[in-house]
Image (cartoon, rainbow, N blue to C red):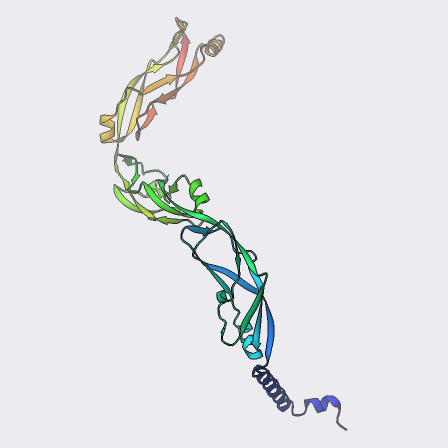
Length: 319
């Protein structure tokens, strides 16, 4: 006598094939049924694909999905479900920033409206928060990193041919924008004068549209030269008890030849800035005191170096 499991396994391929054919036949009969049925589709996406150019959508629609009821022949409404329809909204005119729109069946995509009917939506409306777009001219700022090679010096400040760029987007973002930076330009790679195409740094601009998006940066450089000047040391010399050991020090200026030769050095000063009372206190115990020097008034695009960074102060008449 055959066991029950044995009966199940006998001709199992044939039995599975028969079962599959039965399922296909049942599904075909159901889908070909012309009787009107109803199907509720949940999580139908609501999407805004176009907004009037004077306005900006601040955030996705609320709610982002709704439930939609569809009626029609069973086969047709199942095909609607399988197509994953979407509600697409176009906003051609705006009357207020906080807008509530009643959903329309005409906004549903991927649905053959000749065979099915979209009955309703739950909820029946969505809320849109919009903000007016604004276009403004924003200053462009050059950013430099690195240092020129020791053999080169700037003749003029690096400059971009683009002073302003047009920025368009949400008014609150545009109003808060003070400048648009160029991507950082590395001076260490410069080998001579030239013009370089540099992109505007649009990262973090909150989706603003920027035009143009690049500028030409002009770098004027020349061979590095030097010039030595002997300058008097300025100090609080109203105290007759104190004297400087060196009243004059050498200052070396570095830069491009044309800047060195035409530099106005009238404002160049070497200053021994110290407190006379504090120095006198040191001289009560020591024969001399060292005070630091600082260099002031170096002309633009030049670099100055002191021969010494400090000078000796003694009492007048001392050793």
